[in-house]
Length: 468
Image (cartoon, one colour):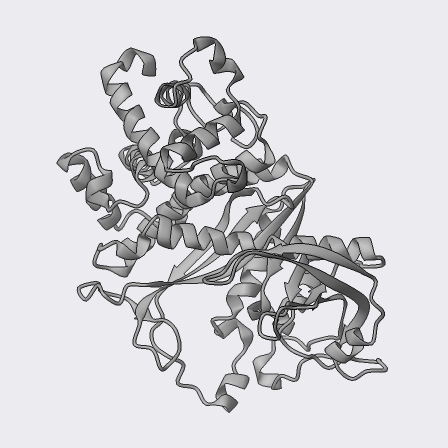
């Protein structure tokens, strides 16, 4: 369901979970129903999202069922995500970790510490891989793992250094890179994108071994081999400015959105192997040759907000245009931050009270797919505005939306476009659609989506023949 129309009567959940296999057809059917109910009111708790008390009990039984595995919930969505990836020449696989706080849920069992040692917060950790196009359209979740920490690491610095990467929590970045490669469609380039937390030498070596392309933000001023300059930053700072580039920095808290100019430098470097105790390695670490793109903000408003990115990639960078391509790709990393915001604040997952980590992980997996759906709809309006509205809505949803927004002519149904539909949904959520308002964001879209789904649910009961 990327830029193609789906079955007129088939809801998004029926399409997205068509291939689900939970080992019991009743569980498969319940999952599709739960996805539809929870996406209709994503901010509501389970009992409010369910149609009645029977549906509420069925929902709780589903999340309590030990036969339901989070990975199996995700599998059908993964398959649909790969189908959408096959239609793209280049896909960015963005990795990031989210920490979900359930500290106020005193009755919940199986939670672990989140944050640092100074924090008493309890919750769950989730590591996600979101597939997006270079234009920013989220295609779906390629992978998700969730866990509760047993406690804070009690190892000494020496013990930690002697521990192999495979036995550290940070190994999730290396595992994610390998996972992306295993799901890569044959004729699609898939580039892994990560922030500075993934700057792990073993990741560079693993990428070389499995022929996986990546762009990550460097966090360490690494030693260089056979270079005039001993360290990475010094080497790139000595390079001439290849060109400049303007970006828009999103608003953050009290800081408004701003447009700024970035100076771009690039060069090829050979990283000297990180020193590891022999007992922590399965094989010696070799030197790794990478290309680096160094981005600095020109005339930043202050030193604290100045943008400075050191990007490392195993994709050749021989020109300003190629360097700029990597910068533009890295700018898409923000998409996974927005996805996590939708999951936490739009879908309110931290308010869920299922009273055990196992149940919460099942719920988080399903709500992650719901969050993707809302995010995808937001970006469809920007990347495919002229596509048919049937790309994102069923025929009954379109008819209901047109009635709610006074598009009363049946002749207009076939001409209704994605941009018109998304704006109409956003207006139901309070979007004013003034010239100065820009594109609607996820918040007004999920509010409007709730209004539309409630109205569509009413219409389906009132006119069942319309629903097939």
